[in-house]
Every structure is written in structure tokens, then in C-alpha cells.
Amino acid sequence: MIERLQVSYLRNLSQVNMQAAACNVIIGANGSGKTSLLEAIFLLSRGKSFRHSQPKRYVQHHQPAATAHAKLSDGSTLAIQKQADATTVLRLNQSTVYNQSILTEQLPTLLIDPSTMDMLEQGSASRRQLLDWLVFHMKQGFHPQWVAYQRLLKQRNSLLKQTKHLSQSQQAELKSWDKGLANHAALIHHYRASIFEAWQPYFAQSIAQLLPTYAQQLSLSYSPGYDVSLPFDEQLQERLPQDLQLGYTRIGSHRADVHVHWRSDSADIDTKLPALKEQAANILSRGEKKLLITALRLSQLPLLLNSLETADTLQPTNQTHATPVVLLDDITAELDERALEILLATLSRLPCQVFITSLTDDIVPLINKYWSAPNMFHMKQGVLSAY
Ligand SMILES: Nc1ncnc2c1ncn2[C@@H]1O[C@H](COP(=O)(O)OP(=O)(O)OP(=O)(O)O)[C@@H](O)[C@H]1O
Image (cartoon, rainbow, N blue to C red; front, side, top):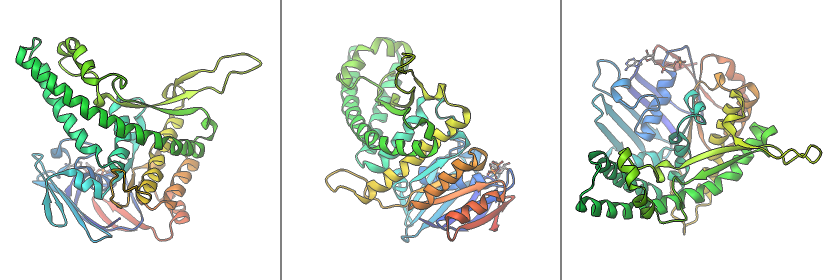
């Protein structure tokens, strides 16, 4: 759990020093800097912002770098410095580290913000990341495989971009990369499929709470991005002419996706109407989609927490006992009162830390109902003070 958070020169936050509790509420007007505070925590955890990829966008104007530093309750410290030119310095316990995943393991953060709410309609990346967040934190072997897969994929794509006609030596090289990709893809799929399997009952439980009328109708499916019943390298070789035309690799673990399906109640015996099946995104109202996305996110936490508790020493599981941090940005604008209450009640029962931003103090009674000692803050023009 984050005990103390210090942020410097991130957007309008010049110097922020925050003593954090299990639940932290940041109240402030539009543009006061609330989201920037969550952005600092996310940056520390993931090494990137959830708003802009280029550091020059979030490093404070006329400053060389933005930094975020956290002291965790187990005494460890994490720090990130992002320079405007994208140079990054990471530290764990005052020592420089060269791999962001080391900090990510220490500080699992789960974000629910307005931009997450479009996840069903966007491309597959955000849904794939949803699954991979769980896989990363629950399966230690996953990340090295993913990094190695991406490295080979990048090489392959850059060759595909260079030419439409491969020389013999290029063909041989590509073949060996494809073999490598197939090995990594098989393991990536293995990890993803097992976590996806474990996730489903948790998702069903969250849907029963947040969207009870759809409890029997919504289900998840996972597509691996290629046909896992056939050797992946053979599929890549078969599709090579199309990939050469396109200049990139169309199938693979990088195209995996998670879908939510809606199915009408089983065929009506009287009317003999058949059961219908659709993508949930095409059926649900805008508000219902927000509840569905909240359920997707929320269902991940108890699964992660249970897996940390019952870590099987025979399984390659991330053994970190880091407390997950949940970032809820402007959530009162997204969810109705009933959904907000279910979300907060569920979070308050889980051993996680929560940071919530809000425009008004309407949320305070609900917070006091579920947390005994929340920390309330006021944000004004980048200055954080006790509420
Ligand atoms: N690189 C930058 N340097 C300095 N200030 C910046 C930079 N980028 C953005 N800002 C300012 O920082 C402020 C922080 O906005 P932020 O999104 O954190 O506010 P917020 O309290 O979450 O607002 P809202 O409730 O409207 O979402 C904005 O007023 C913006 O103009």
C-alpha cells in the first residue's frame, strides 16, 4: 500500500506530498489537478501515462522532468523520473532499475476512468490489456514471453515493410523468426487461456451484482489471435504473401481479444422464437455498457487477491504480495448511485487501496459509510490540502 506519495512537475502539480490511507478522496474543480495525481501513480506503476504517450505533454511546462515517488507500507520505495525527451530513470529502494516490470510488480494499479468506458467499441488493444493485466500479475512466466514475442514481431514487421520480395536468405531468416514466434505464442496463449478460465466465474459474479437483469445473458470469450489448433509458424508462412502486401503481420498473440456476448433467454416455448446472440456492445445502453466495463474491471480484483493468497508453489505465479491500487477518476460522472455504491462497497471489503477523484463532496457520505478512516483532500490549482 502507498503510505506517502510525492509528485513533482507533473502538469500543474509542482510539488505534492500526500500521506495516503486505504481510501483517499481528492475533491476539486475542473482542471485543479485531480487526474494528474492519479496519472502520477499510474506512471509509477506502468511507466507511462494513461492520457498521453509523450512525456513532453505531461512534464510541467518549462521544467526538464516530472517525478513520482512512493513509499510503500512495507518500507520499500519506488520512483520514476520522466524527462521531456522521454528519458526515463527508475528506482526501487534507491537503486536504479532498468525494467519497468519490476515496479509494476510492486504496485499493481487498476484504473477505472471515463476513457476506459469506450473499451467495448475500441480496437482490441484495451480489451487485450485487460486480460494481460491479470496474466502479468498472476503468471510470472508471461512477461518475458511477451517481451520476446514483441521483439521478434517488430523485426518481422520491419522486414515486411522493407520489401515485397524476399531474398532466399531473408526467407530463411523469416522462417527462423516464425519458429521463435510460434514458441512464444504457444506459451502466451497457455497463460492467457488459463487465467481467462479462472476469470469467468468472477465476471459472472460481478455481473450478477451490477447488471442483475443480464446475469444469465452475458458471457466472455477469448480469441487467441490465431488458430491454436495448427502450428502458428505454418500459418505465418501460409499468410506470408498477404503479410508482404500489407507490410505487417496480421495474425498472432498481438491480435488476441476478449469479447462480451449477449444471448437472449433460451428459445421461447410458446412463440418458438430462436435464442439470439450478439456482441453485448450492440445491445446494451450506454449506461449499461459502463456497468459492464465496471464489472469487467471489478471482477479482476478478487481473482488477483485470491491468487496471491493461495499461490501454488508449483505454478509460476508472481509471488508479490503487493496491495493492488485502484484509481477511480471522476467515477461519479460515469455511474449511477446504485452502481457507485456497489463498486465502493465491494472495494471496501477487499484488501486494496483506493484513490477516488470527484468534482464535488457529494461522494463523502458514501465514502464514510464504507471506510472507517478515509483521507479526504482538496485540490486547488495543483495544491493539495486536507479537506
Ligand atoms: N504540461 C503541462 N504543464 C503545466 N500544466 C499543464 C500541463 N498539461 C496540462 N496542464 C494543466 O494541468 C491541469 C491539470 O488538469 P487535470 O486533468 O489533472 O485536472 P482535473 O482536476 O482532473 O480536471 P477535470 O475534473 O476537469 O478532469 C489543467 O488545468 C491543465 O491546463
